[in-house]
Length: 274
Image (cartoon, rainbow, N blue to C red; front, side, top):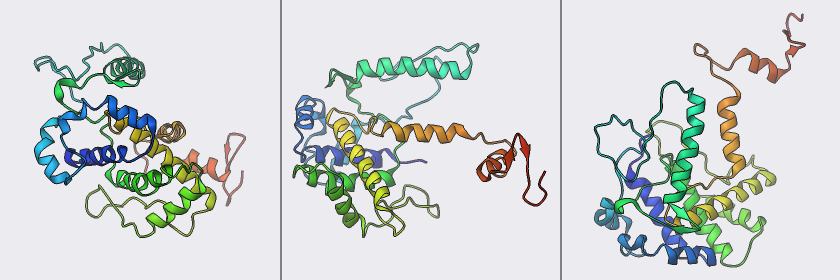
């Protein structure tokens, strides 16, 4: 999915504006600490994003976040370079790189809750996987539901859910995908939604709003904003069922386990039972 840098930064820009509108002492304190960091952004609290982007687009990196290094390129301060012998297995390399990158990332981005450094004045998003259709919904929830009720001192779930249903009732589908592809479902709408599911979705969106605003107030976007449980579910779905190279559908084992057609390690068939 090739989403333009301009579109991604737009959500950073609008979430930063919202940081100034919430009565959260921690976020307001973060904004004071990161004031010098955002100084290069100029007057981002007024005017249109289009005009602001024309004057400040040079602040953002247009490079791919991950690319091969062949040894003859100049060393850049905003990247981590690692030499990996081919004798290591892919699984071992992934663990080593994750640990090394996290250590360097934590030292250079945030230390003791303070923004420490921006590399050579260039701002970079902390993740490349930003689905703009979803972030449009996160932004609307944060602006029209989360901040409004948080500023009133309301912290429960029910009123957030009721207001969310009202806010998203007339929401149009947003998509970052190409024409003709499936658009993402609008949250908080649909007659099949139960109160329990809506409450669960509401709590998740509240977590997203809180974490994104917290990250942006510290100088990063979007940062690590998802719930641990949600991230674990995503990883589990990736690894639970392996895709066979020549398969045209789910594995036979998966289907029979789902339908209860495996007994004592033997295949059974409803038409010809073993």
